[in-house]
Image (cartoon, rainbow, N blue to C red; front, top):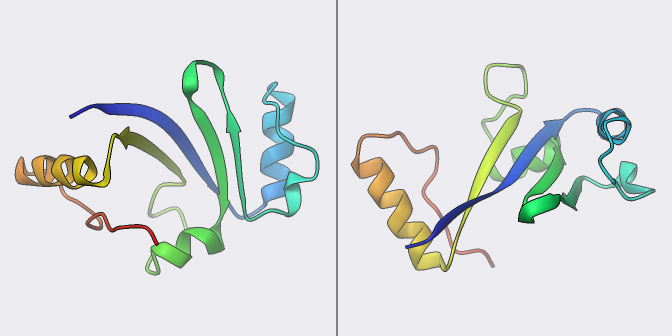
Length: 107
């Protein structure tokens, strides 16, 4: 099972402001992305940096409040198949690490 760290996600309540900040840091964010609920850019080495609005996060985690009690930065790891995702989740939770939600098959 190959698990590869390749994604950093930022949740924002102000997409335009967050993208402007990261552009000043040199991140090549596409023009006009400010009106999108999800923005994703490729970084060096195969990493991806993404932004989601609070509403997008609530669409798959309804209890998420965005009030600072839960993180606004998420890290993601890629697996080779849905079965590998399930196996990694089972291994981690079986070792005592809490899971927020079990993986599901995307439509």
